[in-house]
Image (cartoon, rainbow, N blue to C red; front, side, top):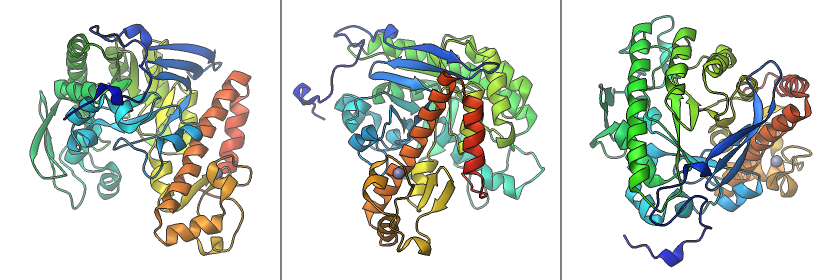
Length: 428
Ligand SMILES: [Zn+2]
């Protein structure tokens, strides 16, 4: 593994000094406008690779790339930052490759802020299966041993960490608080998440209680390892560490987890774990009651437009969501009038843009008929054009929400946007 220092293509990040640990003051958060009567606010997260105006949408670049879209195109459509997945990068190509490349930014040629999640979600998903399948199969029953139909349990949790079978090659591997921190430091994102235990809504109350305590112990171990690695790995920018609040649907557990995690000196917080859609806003609100005001909060893995409004209103600052990219590849496009499929036969000779008035590259240059044709023909450009439109939709949505909070018209904007988006029974 050779690295020629002269090949570094990006500007030196803020707070990186030769022979010195990363300067923690290169990371910070400032609140601009508080939403009256709620935890929601606008603000700015400062990182070594630049600033993020919040609330912000965080596109998901799971494998160190947005699927089908280049970083230059992501920048052009207004992306302020991207989130990659520590577990996937650990599996392939391995964190040492990213370290040798000079970190995630250099490796993927993206000079704006980056996040990595801890890998906990992916590792624990191997154990618990997938909650949607679970919920359908086992309605009304709680069990800690249920797994998704047709799946084998591939991960086992103990006090120290998780042992799992690699989905790539079946090899037995291990994740723990320390290992997650070592991997994430080598990947080098501006914002990392502490390793937490994911539970599902199927787990019993007793298990959720034990899990919150275990996540708290793991959080302390993450901070200790993070401080050690920050001191050892000199010459690099400071990487901020966010603690993750678990506790499923239980108000008392969420509040307890938030006050525990909030007491530990993290740079920010992640709101994670099993969340039932109907109370997603309440959960954010309970948590934000307990967390320190002046630190950023990221809601992990949002799924829908109405969820974004609920989470912004109740204190979320940033949101990652794979839905716009994943659904785009199947032809589902988001517009102000809902989500619909551009592969429908009626689109074959419809020469309007996907959305009238959309300022994205796709809508400015291409028709529904062309995108429909590309997707049916299996052409990669079809995925690219649909993804560009959908990512732009969510980035602009968060930009508009931010303007509505600063401008004092958030509630009207929320009501107008949601009634129009869901008027035709749209999903998403
Ligand atoms: Zn568009």
